[in-house]
Length: 116
Image (cartoon, rainbow, N blue to C red):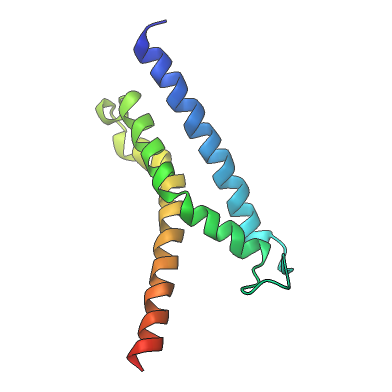
């Protein structure tokens, strides 16, 4: 096995693990329990909110894994590159959307607090 094949297999493994985690977190964020995990905490959080936060936190690593798989498999040289890019980058786009939503909520909260 040459180096490129080993790199491709390693990237596929990391990408598959990221997609599996992303799917589990999406299902939890959509259909998870609304019970508070620790009611005595300063900021009580539900299972849904925690899964959404984990999706947002995993945006950068997932996008890197998507880009590496896309480049190593040379999908950009195949005839259906837009379809392939859409399918490869879908989990990363979902994670990035969660991160952007949390950043927007944070900014709007700051504007509401300090802007009056």
